[in-house]
Amino acid sequence: MSISSSLNAGVMGLSVNGTRLATISDNIANSGTYGYKRSLVDFSSMVLQQRTSAYSAGGVRVDTFKDISATGSLIRTGSATDISVAGRGLVPVTDNSGVSSLASERNLMLTPTGSFFPDQNGNLRTQSGLFLLGWPADSAGDIGNVSRNSGINLEPVNVATSQFTATPTANVELGINLPADATRTGAPGDPYMLPVEYFDNLGRAQTLTFQFTPVVPGAGASNEWQVQMFDSAGNPATSIGDLDIVFNDSTSAGGRIDSVAATNGATYDAATGRVSLNLQHGPVDVFIGRPSDSAGITQLAGSYAPTSVKKDGAPIGDLQSLEIDEKGFLQAIYDTGFRRTLYQIPVGDVPNMNGLRALDSQSYSVSASSGNLYLWDAASGPVGGLSGYSLMESTTDIAAELTDLIETQRAYSSNAKIVQTVDEMLQETTNLKR
Image 1 (tube, rainbow, N blue to C red):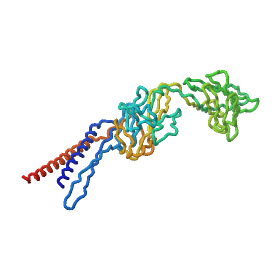
Image 2: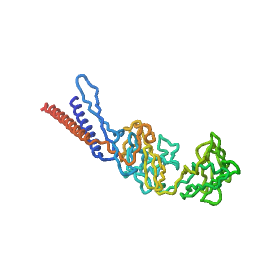
Image 3: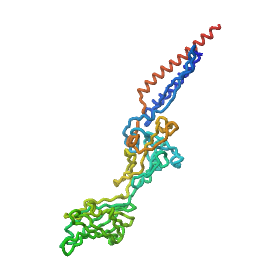
Image 4: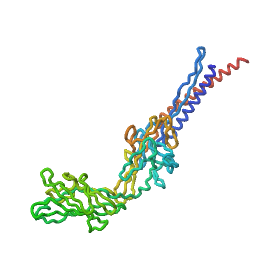
């Protein structure tokens, strides 16, 4: 019995070392594969129930796994859409069938790195057929309320629809000082003009002109200004809104707005300090300041000075490049200098990274032993940030693999010697009959 168990143990030793040789071969073959995670083996002994008079060899068993939790070093590249996770975590991807599938039926996979490029349809994909997934952002760059325990809100990242963009102006902020002496007796009463460029919903540049006319009294100072607003997109000679602004000249609030009366299609909200106008392309809010507030329009004893005039929106622009930041926001950069957030790329994590099921092209899927998936914002919680212009190198260490190869060869030879020795001993037992 002991001799037979020795033979079985030797055969098992040959088998497990053959498995170890296969993992070493795989690791060395993929030493130059970006994102490759090293395969490892774990030997464990097998013990049989022993008798006091004899010992039976139990042998050895082997378990193989991918060391997915290990991270390779990042190397710099020349492409902004070469993406890597700088630390723990994996980015969500899908296969070719998942691009046109419903989110609930899509194959959700994960990968540590990828060299993505737009295909003929504008979808970001790798040469091996992995398509990048992300949460789409609205015009303000927000993704809203999304599910983080599943990929139900993820979409294939597509940049074709963002080749051209135009964002209409919705908000204008005025920071202006009007000369206090212009409302005193004897002042000429000449108006001050302020043209402000804005963009309509087709990306065309238009002009919203503010005409500030001081009210000159017969005696003293009125501290009052009449404001008319003209839109070049409509009839530039017809006012689209009028304001009557009275400034405070008290010790505590001198030079600040005291009251505003809006007429002729304009409305003023004292709580927000904004004037609502209806332009040709739609509504626009103009911030002029709240009563007794130092922000916005002031009337001080200085010259007329438009110190700060801001607006949102952007003209028509042609997509020039893409960039991804550490937080995972994929931004489009246009030739006008305008930047727009298109998607947020999350970073997936599971309790047991090494329990993920390995697939082709350095991708993985969730399994029972990995635990449930959670999609984090990049560079938050336990996961690392996203790095553009970079790819993750293979975690294979050639020197370590060659050392393991020598050890495996010696162990295989030793187990083969056991089988040979048992064979010789059994032959001697057979020869006793002769």
